[in-house]
Length: 137
Image 1 (spheres, rainbow, N blue to C red):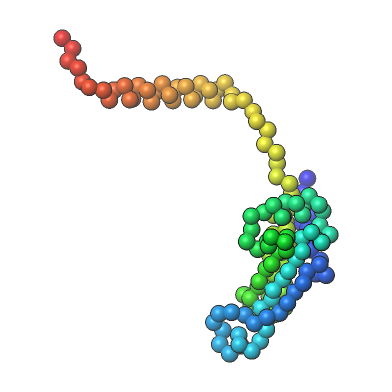
Image 2: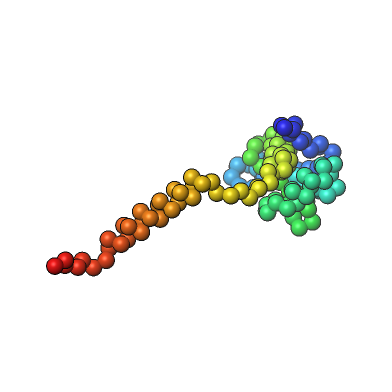
């Protein structure tokens, strides 16, 4: 079962342009090329189970109010940063798109029990040899 990757539409996100931080010379001081993306998970059109798993993530990009905040400032152009932010948001959503497999408890096999006991016996014999040496007369 391979589902198509989920895509968040651009009308569900709020994108704000701002000046980038860090080195970059004069360009960084006068051009608003960085992008701040905000995505409200609860108000989105994502399926409810995906919303729940997304909000349950322990991710620093998700606020207490359930808003995903992504800052993109890697590129010099605003359009590239906008595309980068959307790609990162879609990647985050797709990490929780597929529900995790439920682990079912099973019994250890007969062979694994025998291997475990053989290992314990061998270890016990090794440790038994570490005692005091006694003279046999």
